[in-house]
Length: 463
Image (tube, rainbow, N blue to C red; front, side, top):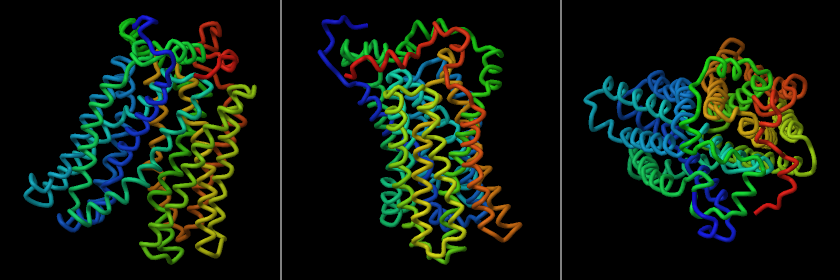
């Protein structure tokens, strides 16, 4: 730890940390999504069928869910900086190698095998990324700022769509399908050096002032969770901790809430464009542009949700209702997407979807990763985030499959929309009626041991 007289007078290092994890989150989302941009060209070059391409596309989601708990355990054992740095390097190499598949495959079968293996590896290796983000927020941000911090990295998907989808499309059209993988893989490799050079725990960061350190620590940040002493002293993970994380009613409501949020996301990136083409008569180009407005409004909603939640907390609301209220209101807003079935004009549908995804963004910004930051046991932050993210991301393969089955059996996209909208209502009711108080797991038995003190945080001047 640096001596006080070696520290700057004032600082905002936590903002730099937030910008860095936001950037890495955007890269992670872009890495997992660029295959959809290159997919048509890959399908044509290697003679893949639609089913074979779908198999490659699905490889990431299965592996991502499988890798959550091991990734969380690694985070709790080795710390955020080391695990994030190693996995960032490995998943960037995996992305780079996708661009070389044509050089190492002599036919369709070999290409299919290599692509599936590399996408599976990408999902497995990326699994700790968002639990690591949550862990960094817990370490660097007081309770009063966690909503805004969590909402930013949770909104990375919208940045990825807005920035890298057009860039990837241009690279494919100009240079070939391989180039999005080369560019994004290269960006990821360079980002490893930035992460390893800048990331530190708060007490050991050379640019953190005493004022900032005191502010975040007294505001509830778990500043020592990545210290060498804490990591060495951490008791072996027990069955009791697993039981605690899998039997807590509050946490299960959070898990299901995340599942419902991700169900909406995967509906949007899989079936929504198809719905516009097949049920509403749009051409493919118009359907692609039609997804921009809901994405932009989803991002704005995410930022708004985090801000509103933190503002409510600062104005004296309890932690529980400051987090729950925006989530409940946002999910009820998102449920309005079912009205697309009865809106006659395509412009009206896009407007309704934009409203719905603004609501979804509000809910995600206030009530998903923010709640993980507020509730995870301090000795199992990575594992708690991994279980949360693993259960939530099951929606990544369940929702598209069930939506397709519903449409296939009934011939009606309207029933499919009701199925998606029902997720919103169920999640809102769980948070309202079932969840109970939001509090750090373990602190409810020993309040004096809690690291959270929102009232105290509100009395400390922000730096």
